[in-house]
Length: 394
Image 1 (cartoon, helix red, strand yellow):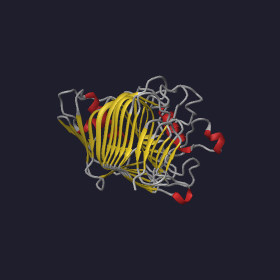
Image 2 (cartoon, one colour; image 1 turned 135 degrees about the vertical axis):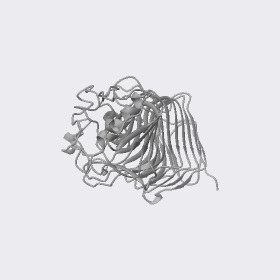
Image 3 (tube, helix red, strand yellow; image 1 turned 60 degrees about the horizontal axis):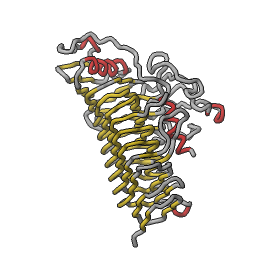
Image 4 (cartoon, helix red, strand yellow; image 1 turned 180 degrees about the vertical axis):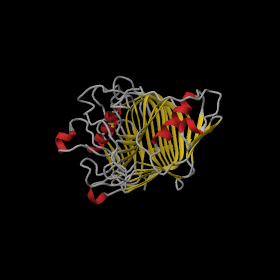
């Protein structure tokens, strides 16, 4: 139940804004160089490359200005973050095209300001469609991409504050738990109608936080790729997550409310992350989860229904699911508990799974609404579905 809620909380956290972002004035023209005075002494531009260096204090304005300058140029841009630690509050990138690259996971770190970030506290679901992100409605996420075609690589996003936000709620859960959530809903959010997003060689770090009432983490999602969350439009495009690490976050790479897209989660690792991969509510989408090494969580790969009220999609249809070649040491290895409609191809093969058999864990769980899924694995398989083809080799 809480696993489903992890995705749902992310979906409705995305609903705290529409696809409108506040205007930021950038004075350069398309063909001119950005002088240091436009964004400050720590930002410079030559052609389509923008270099940003940390100030040692609050870098929010410089990072936002660099992104806005890249978008205003009307062309693909390369934002290069030098070595050092960048301290920031919320950043919003709308229709960004290009790349954001650090100098390596050990060299470039993006982190919070060390004091709780102000966020809108309203129950986004109960109070309907709220105002746009930014300004008076800051999201409970560190970096939010709205649409765009971009990559991000070679850095660490580190959030270690036990309470990184001022507090927010969804579903009226503050009434159940008697308090607001002071976590980040996500380190990275990708929302809108269509986005092509690639993340490579990034360490996503949070902190297990017993004071958090829901999941015991200060970060709920490392990466969340999700439809608008505010109406009938799922997100299309692509999400690729490669050679990255999820460390002490509730969920790692998450995709929900997705249509006509490709999702590829390959070659990543996790430590003390409950759900390194979560997938929900897909149509006409190809999903590949391969060659990952996940450990010390509740389920290495989880495919479920989130079905937010008013959402465009519920369950999985006309979609290919391939889970292959992963090394998993979790309570459960792979949990597929989504509702399969027509046109679903499901293959789970070649995974090395270590699970907690002593306490009821299984290598693979196939829920009651699965069907025609091909599974080849050693270890226990709990098959509650219809027509699934399970082979347990000697």
